Amino acid sequence: MAKEKISIIVPCYNEEESLPIFYEEIISIAKSMKKVDFEFLFVDDGSRDNTLEVMRALSKKDKRVRYISFSRNFGKEAAMYAGLENAIGDYVAVMDADLQDPPTLLPVMYKDIKESLYDCVATRRVSRVGEPKIRSFFARQFYKIINKISKADIVDGARDFRLMTRQMVDSIVGMREYNRFSKGIFGWVGFKTKWLEYENIERVAGVTKWSFWKLFLYSIEGIIAFSTAPLVIASIIGMLFLLIAFILIIVIIVKTLAFGDPTAGWPSLVCIIFFVSGIQLFCIGIIGQYLSKTYLETKGRPIYIVRERETDKK
Ligand code: UDP
Ligand code: MG
Image (cartoon, helix red, strand yellow):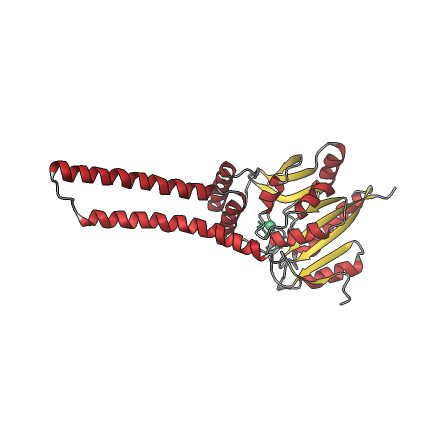
């Protein structure tokens, strides 16, 4: 009987320093797992350094190494999608190139998925050591909010590092949306997931590609992609103000007719106009967010564009 194959997908953006270290680690783990075959699928997400050369060299040396190189930087989500779509293994794992996802967990994950009825063994960090305090704080708040307002189960501290069955991978590949938020997609497709926990590990080399601002925008994207609650909130705020305005108008009319009070002060009026128009702009902004995402989805653009693969002669 042919051996089962595990595909390891590694999105890489400017990882020339980390990738060789990662490769050494992963092949030593692969060597220890004699019962399975491996495929290493590196996705070069339009790196500006020598990541692609590193991949070419590795794939020349090792037949198990495949790579896909994008025409530009499409983001980690696109890189993961390309990996999932092109992987041929019976099981597929997604891992970062910086060894923040410990490869030593792989044998454990494989054992779990083989021996139990799980479709996916995923990992989550139980600590955020080595991360700026303020970032951890906002990350926590984000998970709290999105889980309240979204149907998809999005786990705090969940990494993208997970081993999945072919069945689950196929259903994820079937979700061809352009605005991808994997943490939501993994939860949305369902299946039985087992969680392994570990302490945060700092990256071996290079620097993180996520600034606070990038993370903030990403969190908004996550909310927009997996919840329509902001739209409901906008409508509720609108209705509330309509009600308040209605009551105020009646009060003023009654006051003027019954007591002959002159209606006081235009400064208060200006405040109200500012306040209400502010809320209107805010709500239009929310609608705009959904509209813009819808706009991008309807264009049906490809999620990524390939410039080179290991099968190309270069
Ligand atoms: N990455 C990518 N495209 C990007 C940004 C990041 O493929 O536009 C990859 C990166 O090379 C790494 C993984 O995504 O393998 C995680 O990135 P990073 O370590 O910078 O994020 P962090 O671990 O700090 O959240
Ligand atoms: Mg990292």
